[in-house]
Image (cartoon, rainbow, N blue to C red; front, top):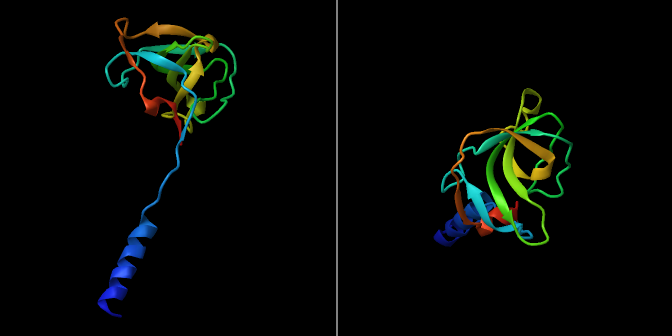
Length: 132
């Protein structure tokens, strides 16, 4: 195989290793959000689920009555939309879903413990509204 053959093989090999993911930009739920820190990585509060909720798309998480949720951010709603929070399910029976972060309607939970009373308000980013 000549130099050209090796180059083509090399390019094809790298092309096979490179995998792309198509992300879909979804409807914007809010223009502003409130977080405990500028990266929204600290927990604001813990909330108890009041009623079941089935996620409407990949940005949201399923909720089951009685489970606990770590809340990382709270959207300030755009007129005509509901109030959504970002969180992660917590509990022994949710081991397979622990660490999965998604949005849920705030009226489906009751905050039981607030860790961070002082929050930072910031604009939402385009990445807040992508479905992968």
